[in-house]
Image (cartoon, rainbow, N blue to C red; front, side, top):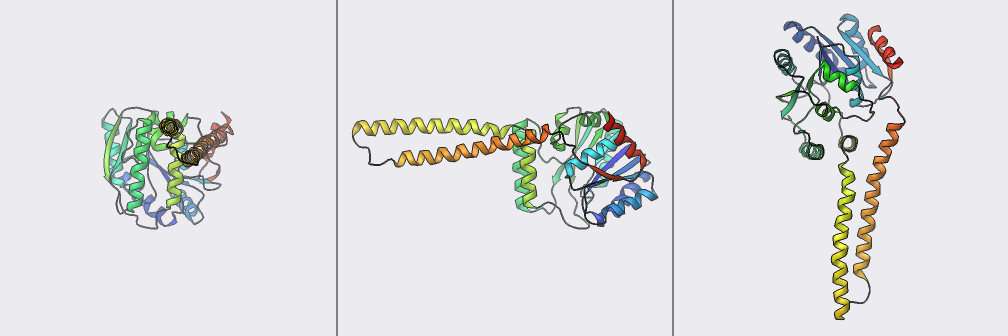
Length: 317
C-alpha cells in the first residue's frame, strides 16, 4: 500500500482538487493507497474540506494541529500515522506532479530501492532572489554535511524501513530533506519540473525562508560554529602582521602619533567577538529547545479512530 502524506496550511482552495486528482490517478493504476492530510493550524476552511472528503472516502485521513507548528512537524506527523509499505510526500498545491509519483512507485516496486528522490529539473516561475537564495542554502548544507543536496525537495518516496528509521529519531528540531538522505539506504533519483499553483499563492515570504534556512543549517550541521575558529585564525594573522609593522615603524622612528591602527584593530576584533558569541548563543538556544523534550506538534483532532488509537499507543510507549 502507498501512503501519500500531504501537509496543508491554508489550502482550502486546493484540498478538493488534490484529493480528487490523487484518488482518481491511483485508482486508475490499481494502486492500493491512503491519503493523509495534515492541517498545520490553518485559519481558513482547510480542515472542513479534509473532514468532508474523509467522511466520503475511508482511504482519506486527516490530522489537525492545535496551532501552526510548521511543515517539518506536519511531515513527521504524517510519517507517524502512515500505514503503507511506502510513503510519498506531496505538496497540497500540486506543484509536485502527481504522475511523477507513479514513476517513483514503479521504480520502488520493480527495483531494489528504498528511497526514490524527486530532484527539481526546473523551479518554475520562481522569484530570482528566492532561486539564488535556495542555491546558496543547499550549497552550504551540502558542503558542510557531505550530502548531495543540489535541487533537493520534499518530494520523495520512502520504503517502510526508511519511515521506521525516521520515526525512531528522538530529536525535535528536524530537517526532513537532509535526514532522509542522512539515514542512508539505496536511493534513486527522478527529475521533475515544478508545476504552477492552480489556486492561491506561496506561503513562503523572504523572512520565513531566511528563518527556515537558519534553523535547518544549525539543526543539521555545526558549520557556523567553525566560523568562530576561522575568524580567530584570521584575526591572529592580522594581529601578527600589524604587530610586526608597528614594531618596525617604532624602531625606525617613523611611527605616527596616536594609535589609529590599534583603534581599528580593536573595533574589528570586538565586532567579530560579538558575532561569534551570537552564533554560539544560537546553538545554545537550540540545545535548550531540545532538552525541554516538548513534542514536535500537538494533535487537536483527527478524522478517524484508527489514527487516534495509534497516537495513544505511541504516547504510552
